[in-house]
Image (tube, rainbow, N blue to C red; front, side, top):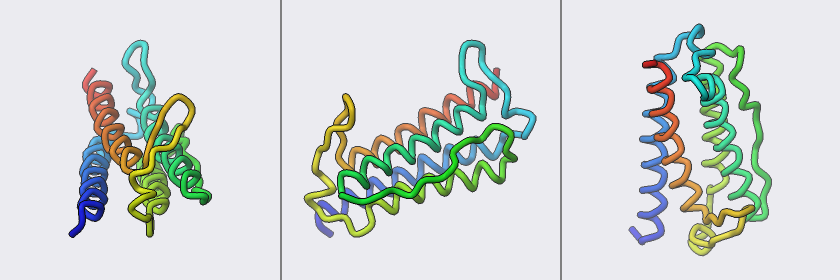
Length: 145
């Protein structure tokens, strides 16, 4: 296995593990919990919507850097039942994963400017994993308050 193949697989595995953590927290949310909010913060449904939006944001970045178009879906979770929210989470993540299909090694490591940020596809995947972990913890805090 090359370093590229190893890095790609590690990034995908980390994203999968982080998403499983986020999904496990979302699966504990009752429909009545979607409007729960920690004072001064977002309600549960907005945190989840943000996580989905982030997947689409990262997929647009990677696709654009590769001269492609990213798949888009509806990330809004307000008023949606949990099974629909989980479906939307899966669609967002699949949009991101589809942007790295058949990616070449040089593309995978190539840094591109996006606003004030700079990403490569590998850092976009790493960012997606970190983002899921961050919001899994945030949701847990909201649900425990």
